[in-house]
Length: 143
Ligand code: ZN
Image (cartoon, rainbow, N blue to C red; front, side):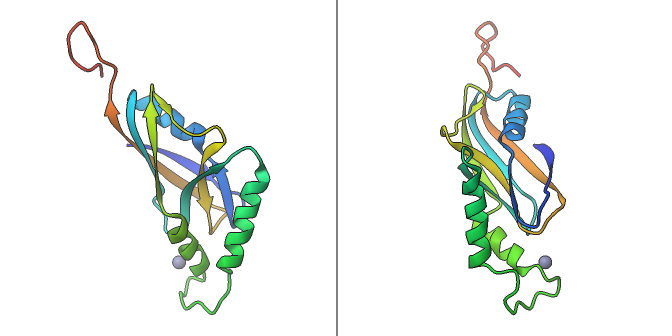
């Protein structure tokens, strides 16, 4: 498993982590398979969405903050129930197909770390399953 940290700058934030995920995939050497991006937090999430127009991220966060307001008579003593709810709505994991050692994302897609109780320094985990390049000389998979 690979791990990297993500610094978030606002209370709610979406940070493009595609490059870090691709780097983690590259370090495994896996050519074809599946990559799971997992966020080990209860007030954050991970999603895949448009990277071309920054207004998409702005609009997503604006609407999510309307759907789940910061204050709404919640009972959780820590005072961050809205963040817990958003974490469950977005989910803590995404899977991406890997072909030729590269994440297979659509032209406009990026992987986003979703912060709902920031700013903080967070973690993301990447686990890759799949095949290594085939070594024709010895007939084994190259490691
Ligand atoms: Zn809490």
